[in-house]
Amino acid sequence: MANRIALTGDQTAAYAMKQIEPDVVAAYPITPQTEIVMSFSQYVADGEVKTEMIPVESEHSAMSACVGSAAAGARTMTATSANGLALMWEIVYIASSTRLPIVMPVVNRALSAPINIHCDHSDTMGTRDSGWIQFYCENAQEVYENLIIAPRIAEHPDILLPVMVCQDGFITSHAVEALEPFDDKDVKEFIGEYKPEQTLLDINKPLTYGPLDLQDYYFEHKRQQSEAMLNAKNKIPEVFDEFEKKFGKKFDFVERYKLDDADIAVVVLSSTAGNVKVVIDQLRDKGIKAGLLKPKIFRPFPDDEIIEALSGLKAVAVMDRSESFSNQGGPLFNEIRSAFYESDKKIPIVNYIFGLGGRDIDLEMIESVYNDLMKIVEAGKINKKVNYLGVR
Amino acid sequence: MSDNKNGWKDIPIGGMIKKAGNAFEYKTGDWRVYRPVIDREKCIDCLLCWIHCPDSAIKVEDAKIVEVDYDHCKGCGICAEVCPVNCIKMEKEN
Image (cartoon, rainbow over all chains, first blue to last red; front, side, top):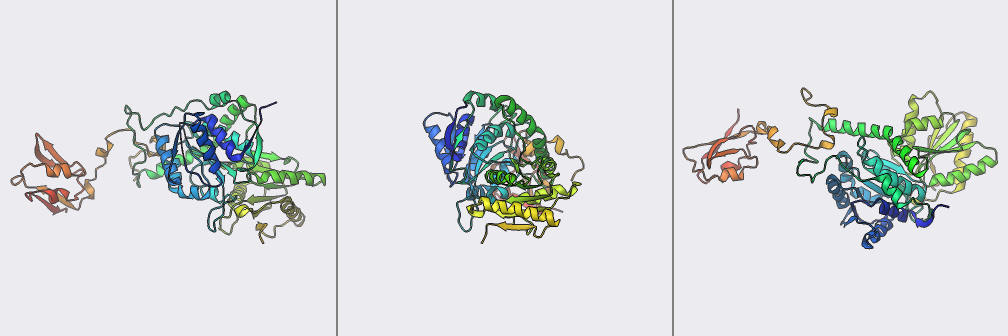
């Protein structure tokens, strides 16, 4: 039997970081990410890793230090949540635009105001256009595996983009789960040594990062970023294959649960997918053909995989744990609906905004979504495009 | 804008500049509204203008001021301001 250890989602992220053993970690603690920084600092203090730990005075400084470190050719990580991510905003864009392969666990938490420390996805969904690759994790095991694969994706010479690995605040970050980690040696072998093509500190090949870039070249550099994200979509499967060869586990952009023969399905990110699976099992016992599609990666957006997975369905509900205030529903809904515009299949797709500020999402609520979907199939039309689930 | 500049496939990623000393290739002279003109008769070659010039646009040979590099001089006027013998006049560009 595989080695199993009991860790919270935060401790899991720190454990993955220990195995990755980045050259530099610059981080500032913020609830509910605090335990990542705390646990990793302990590894540093105990001499279990040789990582240079920079305890900075803010998240703006954390990401700034990461940019400098990554530009200097060091494998670099940080971690944050919510308002911390908001504070590092300026540098979040600079990291991706400067094409620095920084890896950052993010513990999803609602953005202020009013102040709230609990889970929703408003923080990372706000950065969806920042040019970072984004993983969303259902549980601690996924946090672990996504973090182990992240440096390989970030540092891929055809990609060179930073990666966020998102887990749900408190729900995942503070719950103890049984983690099945890989051997240190296997992780080290899989990740390999980071050998950047050029670094800021190579005096024989002088290099300037982040110069002024006006009307004449800025657009070209943005076009390169688009291409890098397209490359990410095309090259990530190669990294998946290597991961499977090394660890014997299959990886994909999306996870399907009882979807092949389903009539109706929910699409949702992160920990809520686990609750949805329980509801699906209950509905299946009643003969209702319910399924789930869980995107594991939101950036690059897995449009083909999503269309392919949902095309055979009679109705779909996309559940968003963030609100975009566009009057058009949440970000996941918007992108899935947009992806279907050019598809031959016209499927009724509805949106449920749920769980903001850590509001509980229970099994009955999820069942009510499937009940709504059955009514949509019966009536052949949608009553309400955007719905709010669990709000008084 | 796009006449003979490289496209996105042909430039280093992320705005990286791989060649040192390239600021020389960026001709900032056309930013100028006023041009410094040095009266060599009055100039005492103290080199204060040379050391203050933010664009290294005062050219010196053998410790003597020889010319202003108008390809790079932005016309900020610091040289005229620091000159102890007032031998630099800022003249309006045409």
